[in-house]
Length: 246
Image (tube, rainbow, N blue to C red):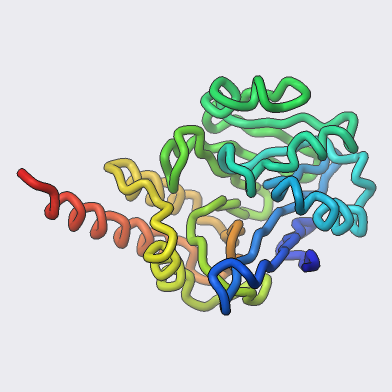
């Protein structure tokens, strides 16, 4: 395996490791995002066992000891498995996450105390502004959240729009169909009453780029893609509810 580096926005780098053994033959990509500024930020740490690959990739962009912020969508191995490895090599780095994630996991699991972010709080990393947005249970996880980089209007979607394969770093093609196909394999989305309204609220941000954790980042009609995904989830929720015994 190797970790591929692509700049998907102004000083925003996608670090992608394709694992062909997961859902072969398509395989599955694990993506982290490095946002450069006076205080560089890493969104997703990668799996603990991927730390050598991902840290080597980051070192080709910047000195890894200069990393200042570490955040992710929710507490899960592929999102934050290497969290403490990053804290060990970057002495000034701090994990930042929402209140729920900090209370239920990170206050205990992170080797240094995390910074608790309120919903809508912005961290100015110098040249970039990172807004944290709570999305509980969307797409899954009580502690779920996303970040929005305001200057480039990049929405870091976490597991939303997850799809298979080792596609290009950036696409303008359909990402909703592939996401629903992956959902039929993984059943990873928490289908509840908040799913569609939460995704539609993200569409109100009018992002330029959707940076996906699994699959190609998207620069097409992002607002339409978010609304289409919300509608598909809503339809699936209604079908599931209709099939429940009275």
